[in-house]
Image (tube, rainbow, N blue to C red; front, side, top):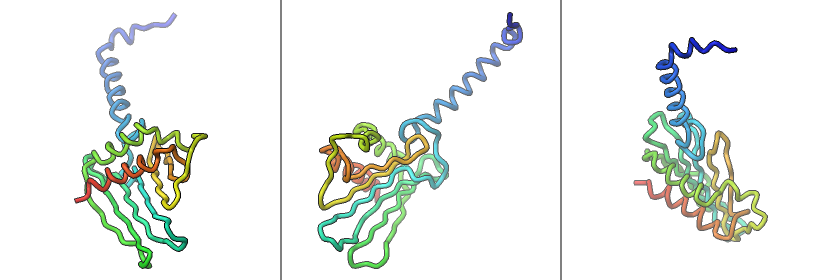
Length: 168
């Protein structure tokens, strides 16, 4: 038989230890995306890339990327773009509220983007390439207009709209 006398004498300490472990696990779950700990500063959370493909030589694009910062209440939103005529990419950086990532992840979870790549009834869009890459459980998931459900382009554009809404 096991002797539990050591536990009986330390029940308050055991309860405190359990509460601390529970709090740490609870607080680390779901901060961004489904589960996982809060990522370190400069971790990419969501990347939204859009390129119109109306001509064969089209090289223009726009990209918005949300990164963590040392301040858990703020994120860095980097905007990159390139026009067909330009040789170089231009970039701008903004400090935005951490709610920007939460808003993006609400769309990602609502529309179950994590299942898009395994959907047997997927479609692809002509004339546009939209890619969304996001962090989930410590790994990146990439979805695009190359393989998506019928309403996928609108869903992906809504993620870009959310990110753009935090500029300014």
